[in-house]
Amino acid sequence: MNPLIILGATGSIGRQAFDVASRLDIPVAGIAARRGSDELYERAVAHPDARVAVAAPTGAERERFGRLGRRVAFGAEAVAELARVPGVTVLNGVVGAAGLPASIAALEAGNRLALANKESLVTAGPLVIEAKDRGGGELIPVDSEHSALFQCLVGEPSESVRRLILTASGGPLRGKSRTEVEQAGPAEVLAHPTWSMGPRITVDSATLVNKGFEVIEAHHLFGIPYERIDVVVHPQSIVHSLVEFVDGSVKAQLGEPDMRVPIQYAITYPDRVEAPVAGLDLPTLEFTPRDPAITPAFDLVVEAGRRGGAAPIAVNAADEVAVRAFLDGRIGLFGIVSVLEGVLRRIDDREINSVSDVLDVDREARTLAMQEAGLAC
Ligand code: MG
Image 1 (cartoon, rainbow, N blue to C red):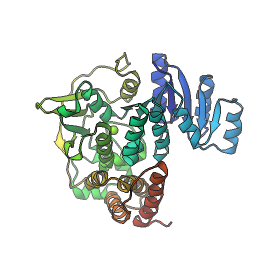
Image 2: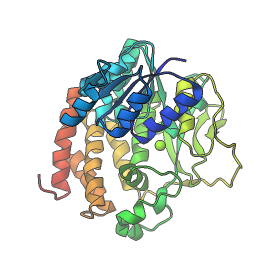
Image 3: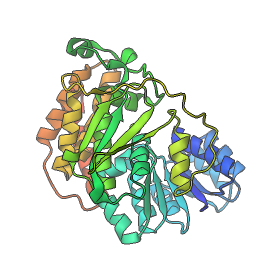
Image 4: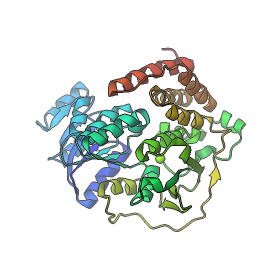
């Protein structure tokens, strides 16, 4: 197996990737994080052959890491540089639009990209796919839903696919009335029943904004038109997604919710190897349609995906601002919807040809979102 480069090494996906690498005896050839924390330093010491990149170090961190010698580099460009090391698998667990340059770099260099950074495909799907085609890299998703779709599609030509069906747990607001959702505060929303995740993605799971992003990602990853991608609510989070084929057959991928499985599969594909994950005690599996009355933000996000260009970048940036405003108690859940709506109405359509185009729209949309959320800027 190729050596592994772990980007976002101190985040939840990064930590689990170290776990997978040590269990499978895969050499770690590089590690990167935004900040030079103690945790990153310990990883660097534990992997004396790994190159290290720190995207935005403080002065003190720069000094401390500098003493590790010439294998350390600083700045955002150093992270993309790591992704270009030939003959490696790049696990991109960076959070936010900062992960995009490394995704493009890895694919252009012909590497395998195990992709956990959502923003890469949400904000710049066409650029990422072009980089893959140009460089001949492999793009293997790590998100549980997309890994499931990928696994169901192994050996199946794309013409045989009728539709993709992504599952959504529905989060803590499933089955609630519109009024209850309107009044739900941060504490209630942050109590996610099946997956434990960071605060933004937990809010995004409740509003189904996250599922909207996943529809956009699936569209780019598998080249399936939006009208053939559906979402179904499945509270147990055991069926990670399904593919329906032209002959009416449906394949699904099931398993306990444990991110080490999709991380490991993206690294070992096409092989499957042992993992310390228990088999399934098949529980009762429920599937219900999404309730559009309590998840209007989902429709806005998918619509932004269809519009393409600046719209998906803008909706992603706007959502980040809106979720922060929600967590600060400044707006309610439907306030998030108004912010997204306002920003999508005001952002100018344009072609996106580079990472800097993406970042321009991102900045613009954040300013608009602050205004829409009634925050000073
Ligand atoms: Mg997911």
